[in-house]
Image (cartoon, rainbow, N blue to C red; front, side, top):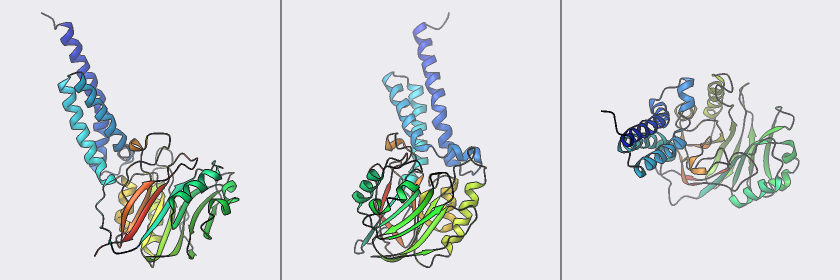
Length: 319
């Protein structure tokens, strides 16, 4: 006797959903493996969207009462949650409630963006003490007095890349001292900023896109050169940038291990700006010295870019 049509249909649906669940399971496995191979690292960037995909498959299976598929999807959801948790809730120092706080705003503005009004609105609303920007175009730089109206102390480091220009900016309400960055492959700028917490060495960085968009060693070489600069910092360091990598993947792990820094919490995501933030990737990140601690982290108002801005309040860490 053959399998009844209804049972056969349910079997096929179970197999279909289980097959689809293989994708988030593969992402979770890549992220949890700790392997730095380029194929593994690409998958390791996506545990956040993979988590929501696995949850959607689990809910669909539960609604249809497809228990085998629901079980596999639940396992995938748990694996993705474990994989993404170090991004969302990193092991970090606790802030000293008696110490003052310094607010830092970071944004990748996108070189083709000429919307100075949106950029100025976003920065003003953040009420930040320090502003770090990458991919500031010539058009926006020409309107720096509007975009950075409340930040008279500025380092606008122009990079000869692209017809529209490309600047990394460190700007502050308080005095800053620019420093020279070394490294032929590194796109970064740095300055010592006088803050309520004392002098802080603030770095703005923009790492290249990962393999297969660039050669596989590009990000690693840039991170090594950035490490050399951060290690020379005379004060507590804060590195804000578009790393084109989440904090739990290869480059994020390299930044934290080699520079001795801690990642700020990475939820919700920053890229792409058109996607719902909870499922986005936090490739725009703020890493900080262990002598500092994050009080809170949130996203800023849109700037017209394909990246969302990040706003982090930092204070002194408890001993």
